[in-house]
Image (cartoon, rainbow, N blue to C red; front, side, top):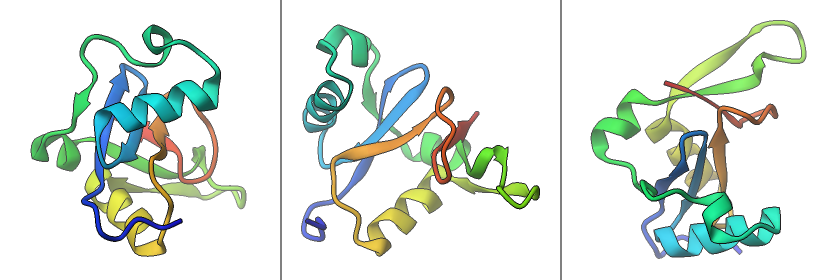
Length: 111
C-alpha cells in the first residue's frame, strides 16, 4: 500500500545501508524482518534520519554496480531525488532504499 499521507524520510541504518520510511523504528523493524537478523545486526548506534545536507550530498546510482544492463554508465541522483522518485511512483514504505553492498537496479549508494 502506497503511503501518501506520511512524510517519508531516509534513514541510515549502518555504514552501508539506508532504508526509507516514516520513522527510524519502523525501518529497523522492517530490516530485521527482511534479513531475519536481530536489531544489532541491521542498525548500529549511529542509525539516524538523514539531514538535508546528507540528502543532497549522498549519491544514488541508478544502475547495476554502476553500469546499466545495456553497458552504459548508471545515472547518478542525489538521495533526495531518488526518494522523490520512490514517493512519486507510489512505493510502499518502509522499504530498503540503498546500500554500498547491494547491486540491483535503483539500489546503489555512493558518498
